[in-house]
Length: 208
Image (cartoon, rainbow, N blue to C red; front, top):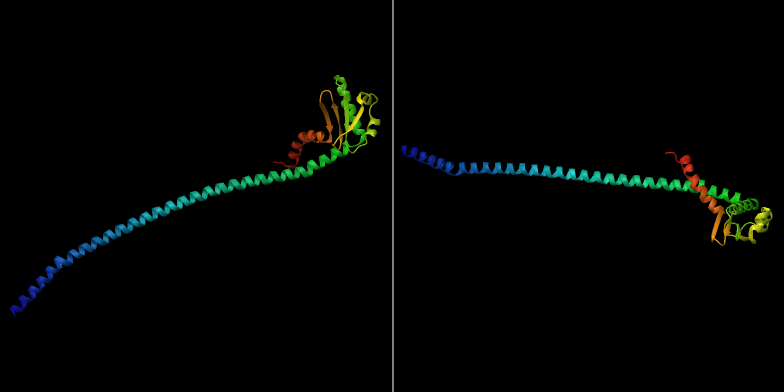
């Protein structure tokens, strides 16, 4: 019986030795591996979260920049569209009406004759009434204009010369010796009136 008990003790001793020499170190090593793995996992998660936050911040910054660019482009496009619309309205309501009005008023023989009278008289006061030639619109009979001129004006014109120009209304007087032309044609009058009236027209129609 003692022999059997001794055998059991021996086996127990061997098992205890195996446990202390093999199993216990293995448990410690396994615990260390698990702790290292957990630490690495936590570090990876933190790095991933930081990288994700950085990517989100960069994406937000990029989106904000693109939004500013888009809003700027949109505002510029709206401004250009509004200006184009203003120019279209101005052209149709202002320019066309003004041009038609000026041409209608300035293409009658009486108005043309009065323009020539005024120009020649003004030049005469300045001593510049030599070598003058009157120019009338292409749509008006120069003979009708001649009959309506003041008595002294026709005599003042060089060889009583009245030429036909390419403009539609008004009149011009050429100082041939000075190589100058006094221009009261419909085109010149339109340009003059446009410069004075356009700003008032814009204020009237485009408030703000």
